[in-house]
Amino acid sequence: MTGQPVGGVAVKAFPVARSEARLLVPALMFIALVVAAVASLGTPLITSVATSFHVSLGSAQWTLTVALLSGAVATPVLGRLGAGRHRRATILATLAVVVAGSALTVLPLPFAWLLAGRAAQGVGLGLTALMMGVARDHLPEERSAGVIALISVVSIIGAGVGYPLAALLAELGGVRAAYGLGLVVTAAALLTAWRSMPKAPEGRSAHVDVAGAVVLAAALLLVLFLAGERNLWSRHLAVAAGLAVVAVVLLCVWAVIELRSTTPLVDVRAVRHPAVAGANLAMFVGGIGMYLLLTLITRYAQTPHSAGYGFGLTTFVAGLVLIPFSVLGFVAGKLTPRVRTRIADPLLLAGSAVVVGGGFALFAAARSDLAELFAAMGVLGFGVGGFSAAMPGVILAVTPKSETSSAMSFNYVVRSVGYSLGSAIGGLILAAGTGPGHLFPDDSAYTTAALVGIGAMAITTLTSLALARRRSSETNP
Image (tube, rainbow, N blue to C red; front, top):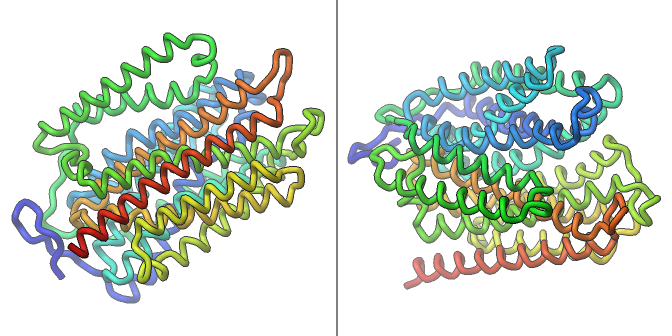
């Protein structure tokens, strides 16, 4: 079997035997699930970390932010390394770093070491795109599309799996016990990868653009910092706006570096392809909306009754609200490959965005009963699952096999930034809706945030429909 040409030379691919494929697919799913769940461990543990380490909630928030940051920086680097012949070694080395970071989170060390461990755990987020590259290279074409779609979905619902487990362990045994879960599953993922990951096809090479990686890291650091520091926007707007301009300039410089480089970190010319650019725009805006609703529902569920609304749920019980998100997200991921035979991927993106918008509408109109929150979270999960499963098909339809990891890596960077901005926008809207002297925002602030989310999903739907129209015109000239 011959892959796409690389540098004018046909690249030989190596599909694994059917028996090996049966083992490879669960391994790919398990690794993608583990790295997503472990990176999300910081979400339910922020309050516990602040209490255990005697730091502020703002400082404890960095246990989540630093994982997102390291993941966003590592993803394109690993994607480029994964495009070369050392992909297996890259996967094993990355998982070894994640295991080492997990050990740091468990050992009785100061807070700075916990942050270092969380940064190392976040590096694993870059492996999702590599799992897609392995699937595309080593599985039959008719099988790989469905597996890649499921890997994309699993990388999303991993948060829903890890959240309640981490919260339960934190309540029973403290924050170290919760992070101990991460150590166990990452060690299992490393062993799984060592036993199951095949070598990359011959004839490929990959070089990392160090200058591009450094500039991109600086730009992403500013973006995620600005997304996390909500007080900076409310109290020092000029400073925040100035840093935002610097971030944009750095991203422009990075794009110029990539265009001039013979071995770019991300093939910007390929990213400029209308289908890829449109898909990344849909992922960015859609990511803002999806994460906005996720944070709104979980925060609303934990708000005490004294605020005049909310349910006062504990962290663990609030984590259970994510179960419909994970279950229906997985169901959508399983259904999407079958639906793709009849409906084009861009139309599936548009339909999924409409479903997420429906989740926003449900939350805006009905949230007085806990069952309504479960319903809204289930609708969100189904929409996110369908969206995530369809996204790789849009991008990979115009991407050579050798560039699978790199192309999807850039998409996941876009997704990470979108998620971070979604969380920040939600926080800013709720902060603006909090009256003087009040600890919790007015209930109407949640409605306002939901309406903003509906607008974001409307933009995502229109972008996806434009992609569908373009594909239709290309296939039916």
